[in-house]
Amino acid sequence: MKNIVRSLFFTRDASDDELRRLIDSEHFDPLFERANEVRHLHFGDDVYLRGLIEFSNYCKNDCFYCGLRASNRSAVRYRLTHDEILQCCDEGYRLGFRTFVLQSGEDPSFKDEDICQIVHSIKTKYPDCAVTLSIGEKSYNSYLAYFQAGADRYLLRHETASDEHYRSLHPQNMDPVHRKECLRNLKKIGYQVGSGFMVGTPGQTLDNLVQDLRFLQELEPHMIGIGPFIPHGETPFAHEAQGSLQRTLNLVAILRLMFPQALIPATTALGTIDPRGRELGLQAGANVVMPNLSPVRVRKLYTPYENKICTGEEAAQCRRCLERRLESVGLHSVVSRGDYPGVRR
Image (cartoon, one colour):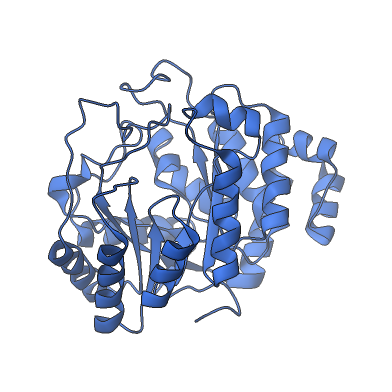
């Protein structure tokens, strides 16, 4: 195993069989040590904070794994107004955040002009900040309009690179080819692009995970977000087993070795399945955390999965809590946009 890790460290690649062995390994110390070495080489002990604003939990899609799905009649829906989103940014800026991540379900109520106005308002008020959008599949022209309004980054997980597996997780009207094309369009326009996948979704195989790594090699994203599958009681996958903590951490470390300069978050989902999940993610090579800036009154309502952590804390509490957690593993937060090395608008 050490030889495979060493080769991955130097070449940033491995055979499919070697990747399968690393993903499934229980001998993770050499893998994590090398991943930490690479993270430290490129980023030192710095961890970038992103201020997350979950501005709508409406969604037109019906993904089988997601609690925001349109068929979930138990969900209490909400939308933040333009002014409420800006108030979240005001609080975040005061707390030192220099990247705001605007995330929602695929809510048709927000037209392109609405998104452009929100982005433009934030960039006008805070020109030293980056704006990241995570609002799903859109047309090329829509993505271009958001970019021209000032959006810097876009997050769109491909979820799974296997077309067959993708179709087992989504309704027939959702197309894996179109999702990948969206990612290519985002890169073509000039965004810093984030992709990623879930670990442990029903029916997922080791070969599927290797396909995910190969797709990311082709795409060359700037950001890669992965997290364990966590079931939600109001979905068809309510009784499926959650994803493995160990396998997710192994993949975080593999991604760090394959993409040394990528911005890789220690996700809230990791912290949900294990009290120290985010710290473990950072020790496996992650270098981004995303405290929640959404109003406390709506946080419990944005539930793509159940038992999500940090739904009752004010923004300042979230930041202080995360800083203590970073310090516990020898890392510290930085007040910075945290762009991909060498890339900035």
